[in-house]
Amino acid sequence: MNKQHSMVTGIRVIALLVTVAAGLLSILATNDNGADDNQGYAVAFPVLAADGVNTRVRWSADGASWSDGAFPVGFGDGSGNALAAVPDKTLFIAGWQTNGQVRMQQGLGTGNWSGTPIAAIPSENARSAPSSVFMEQGKWLVAFRAKSDTPNGGDRMVLRILDTSVTPPRYLAGNRFGYPGQDTDTSGRPAVAYVNGKVLLTWVTTPARLHLAVGQLAGDNITWQGHSLFELTEPNCNPLRSDPVLSHDHSAFYLGFLCSNNTLPPTGASMYIHRSADGLNWSYYGNWDKRPDGIRLGANIGIAGRADGSLIGAAITMAPNPQFIVARCAGGDACKESGNTTWQAVDWQAVFGPRAPDGKFAFIATGHPAE
Picture 1 (tube, rainbow, N blue to C red):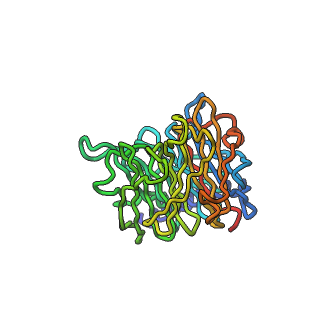
Picture 2 (picture 1 turned 60 degrees about the vertical axis):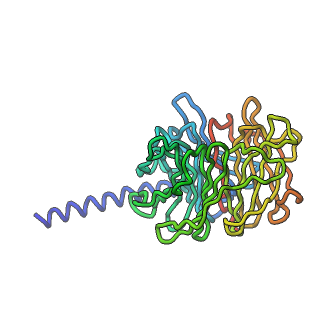
């Protein structure tokens, strides 16, 4: 009896392994994002469709010319998307939230995605689109806004670790990282960054206050090293007008946000950038928008840093005249306000295809070409 049970169990395990392997081989067989991959940047965003909201993913080698990433139809939500990639690899993960559930989906490059989302779902009731970033050894950080556990406590910020190195993937138990006492009454979508064991998390509380927390990864735990209320001391910046965004170029962290600017018309804002080597000490890096009318209030923004030091900032203005605006620079001091950074409008249809995003987009550097 025990022998028969062992044989049946063994057959089931073998069948499962064959099924998983066949699915992976199917993806690999159709993968055109191999060693010659030149996906320098990628963007994920939601679009309304007759059958609901779909996620779209597109990629670019230079931030100007874009191609379709062929994300599966039928998955997404209007609140926005997350997107992350393993540096110098073709492993991607995209995310969204629907009906309070954060869902994540894996891909090999931007053109070959799993047909279904990862089954694992955080237990918290999500109230925003997620943000995500790759950590190490198959683990990803996933940040989102969630309903507070305390009555009348407002929304709070949540940071979870998703482990895709195991089968099936799972969110690690006991790692529901918030920042005690400082994460209530949050609004918008938080942003997260990671490099060499250091975690950065930033979010906004009402009314329009920007928070920044820094932690260190030890095993599967994060030890928070500090939290600060980020003072908006930039020239002419008042008040904060967007969710914050984060990036890293392998030498420094970058923090970006929109502010009203008293040198612009009431409908305009500027994109401000700060830079930090350690995530704790920040310096003003510049106002990246020198166009006469600024960036339209309510625009979604993103920044993407690369290991070669180059940095690209992006903004999509709102209706009635959608426009994708890109600033690119060579890195280092050249990216500062006094450097050679210039904004240029890129046809939004070239970036997003036939229609502008119907929610917040995610904009990342993918680590390709090889650096």
